[in-house]
Length: 522
Image 1 (spheres, rainbow, N blue to C red):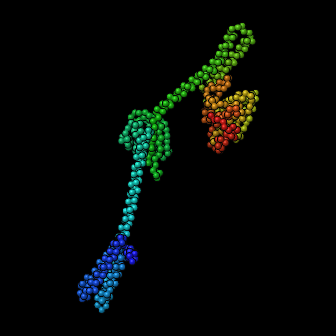
Image 2: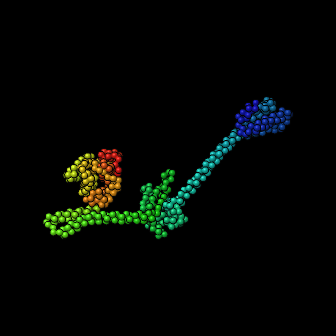
């Protein structure tokens, strides 16, 4: 019974607790009963009291409409009309039902209208409560997000304060927005003075930094980097490595630029000192090499002249002495010529040539020299190489030197293979031999001036080869395995954009050149 009563109360639309609902229903019911009893026990002739009592039905109807809404108001209005029926139907003259029906209509109208208004107000209250709850949740999330953003901002500021590189952010108009402490120290001005001045006003000479910032802000480039010397308005000259990066928002709009510059003045000074020291060391090695190469022939010439002067020299002995002197003079001339070629290289005359045609000429006038040393030369040419832009004479000098070195390395004869190909925008030429190979120590010094494994060598051949290849924007690589042989590969860039480049991997190209696996590359 109690459960049915509670279900009926919930159906009426009440949103209060169960005890309150029961009390509200009891109040409505009791009010209806009291008003009905007053009607029944009041003399019908007392019309004023009857009129008052029938108006009293509005009290429980309004109360029910206020508490239970539209359903409660209508049910209570109908209940009031039913309870009022015995009195209302007998009060009219000659059984006239109009007064009763009018009262019944008023009960239903009042109950329905106020109940509907109560429901509307309840729905609005519920909507406001729901919106308020959503706002509270959104505010809580916003508060959490604000705390996170504050933490991220503090973390970012800590990073900017800690790094040694200067960081300056500028707006779309080039005015300074923020400056970190490192930038303040470099520029010699505080952030309060720098913001929001145009960044161009900070330098007497910006070293091209202003042009880079303009390019980034105009959207022409996303990022620039340069190393230059700048002079601040405080008169300080700094050698910096500066980068300018575009700064965008989530929607991609350009907010400005981030300028990062690092003081590399000390690094530049140390680098220059190291370069000078390296040049002096190289000059010392070169001087020692020249002295060694020149001293030996001079000693032989001196000893030969002394022998001629000491005894009565016949024509045969004088002829032998003259031959030795001329031989050593030729050796001196060879050293001086190689030294001049190394010290004063001629500028290359660049033309487009077919490398394989050039190699055929080289092989033609080196084959006889190789044959005399029992060395066989074989060719494995690609057959369809793009032309390269080189100095033909200098390239012939390079390959003659490589083939000559390979021949001289094989005292008991052997085989030289010359292969060509194209890979990743480079034409490659490999001169491989099956000679004794080179040790790791020899490989480390093979391009050093005056380093030679032969007594009669000047030690400048491969040094000149390396310089010539560098001047042609190429590179040379040496692979060697002791007792198995060596391979010297020259890579020359293909400058023709229309050439379809071979996409083979370098290691695959190396195997197709016939290079043995496991060789050490220099």
